[in-house]
Structures are given as C-alpha cells and as structure tokens.
Length: 434
Image (cartoon, rainbow, N blue to C red; front, side):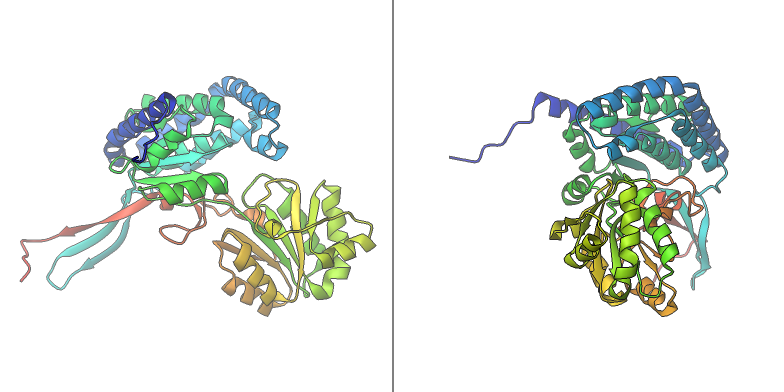
C-alpha cells in the first residue's frame, strides 16, 4: 500500500492562497518602492504616524478585545503586557515612525568606488532587499515598527501577525496602508495576511521569487520552524536566554541594581536577564541581598544547590534548578541562579546555554571584563551595564525590526542598514575582456 498524502484542510488552503496573494501584491510594489525618493517615503511615514493618532480609539478598542480573549485563555500576564496597547504605547508607535524620518536615507548610498586596471569605474551602492515578510506573535506594535522601517528602507512588506493580536494587527495594518498609499506610495507596499492559520506562514516561507527575506519575531518554536522549513532566506531574531555574571571584583551595589533592572524592567522582552551567575567567592555576601530584591519584585528563583543553601540560611525560598532551567527563556517573573568558579566558568556556561543575544559581566577587574567581552559568543556583550539596553532605539539606530542572533548579513539590533543589500554598478567606455 503506497504512502497517503494528507490533503490540507479548506482553511489551510485558503490561508496559503491569501498569503501568496499578499506576497504577489507586495512583489508588484517592490520595484516601484525602490525608485521612490527619501522625501516621498518620509511623507508617507509622517502620514502613517498621524493616522495612528487619528485612529487611536479604534486601535485601543480592537486591542481590548484581543486582551480580553488572551486573559480568558489564561495567557501569562507577561505576554498580555506585550499584547496590550495604551494611548501612551500608540503614541510611542507614532513617534517611532516620525523618528524614522529624521534618519538618513539608507538607499542609494555609495559604499565603495574604484577604478579598475582596465579603466572600468566600479561603484557599490545600497539598494532595498525587495519584499520583506515579517512573521511575529503577540506584539501589535511590531506591525507599525516593521511597516515603517521596511518602507523607509525602500522595501515592500508582508505582515503576518499571530492570532493573539489578530484584531489589533488588522486595524493597525489597514490604517498604515491607507496612509502610505494616500501619499503616493504604491498599492501593495504594506500587505497584511489576515489568516492566523499556520499554513499562511508556511506559504510565505516557500514563496521564492516573491519574498526576498523572511524575518520571524517570536518564540523559539516559531523561529526554529522557519529556519528548518523555509526555502527563502531567513534572518533569525531573538530568543533571549540572557545572562548577567557577577564577578568577585564587582561593586555589589551596582551589580544588584543591574540584575534587578535586567530582570524586572519588563519580563516579556527578549533582552531580559533569564540567568544570574555569581562568582563563588562573593556568593555568601551577594546572593542573600540580590535574591531578596528579586523576590520583592515577585520573581521566582530556580537555583543550584549552592545557591539554595545560602538562600535557605537567609530564609529565602527557592526552587531547585534543573538542566532545563539553564536553557529557558522564561519571559516571566522567573530567573535561574547559579554559582560558578570564576569568569571562565561563567563564559563556558553562557556559551553552552545562551542564545547569542545579550550577555553582561559586572566586574571592576578590567582583565575579567576584556576576557568576557572577547570570549562570550553573543550579538551584544556588556561590561558593567544592564542587558536591557539591547534595542535599536537605545543604540541610536531608530526603530528596529528585531535583534538578530545570527552572524550572516546582520547581527544584534538591526534597523535600516539591515534591511538593505547592495549592487555593483560598473561604468565603461567599451571595454572587452581578453
């Protein structure tokens, strides 16, 4: 008996058809987008910001319905926080679009120019990627950030948000698309796939010839699925199993402030600290105070045996850490804590369990800082600072499309430059090659 091929459901077939249609419309707009001027794109961005403000009430109403469904489905509050939009957050989305207008045009920049041995004039210039598909989960602000940054870089964009924020994303995408086209940008420059069926993502992943690059923003499962199954180029963004290592030479007051900020500023973000590593010689002095501070913020501690012994003596409750905890991105008020024997042991732990996102050392010993900075394999390495700064805006790049944890094309916070490629223009006077 031969193998039977599973027939996709009607819903999945429709999701695939919708995604391909959106990619086709974006592909039609992409060439025209690459020919727009910076002034034209900036005018569209300004109109998009004004439209967000004008439709803020409608966006909040749609978002309230999304939040209500999420809470009814017992979604973690840290994820609800990522989902929720307030008037302030909508204003921040609008300001981020306006800030893009102030950034230099990333398109048409002369990156290199040389005259070759045969008199050919060779120039390398920046160009848009073309069609960028962004697949993301529970953060509706990504809809505005991704649309704005892709348009500023001369790209067309296909947006496919997750089911949790479906109503919010639909309203935001419609508002932005209408505003952009009202300023003369081509129809199809901002496309949104309304279907939340996974088949829509699967279709974008294999839309070679229509989609130039796919960017997944979300949990490890989404990113791994895209990396394993996509036939279009993928830029990985984010899972952030980030660490703070507190060295024996650290200023303990500063270290405590950094740990609490890195963990507790916002729990559901990819630059939050998920594991604290403490040098053994300072464990008894530092752990009781920092654990007490974390518990006061409502953080659950998953600790190794040495940490638990110190915590027990101080009357602080901890749960035993398992191998799974060292590799977990909690995105919640939880943290793994481990004592280590020196900076090399911390580096080994981070390089084994980290996701190459953001890592920090707290130390007065400059040698330890330099060793950590050189040997830790991550997109961003901090010395004596919180991992919370890993952000395109904080790095002076403007709005970001995500944090890349891979090494090809772009790494770390990537903004306008990361959404461009380049081409060579070679000008001659009739040269032929022998």
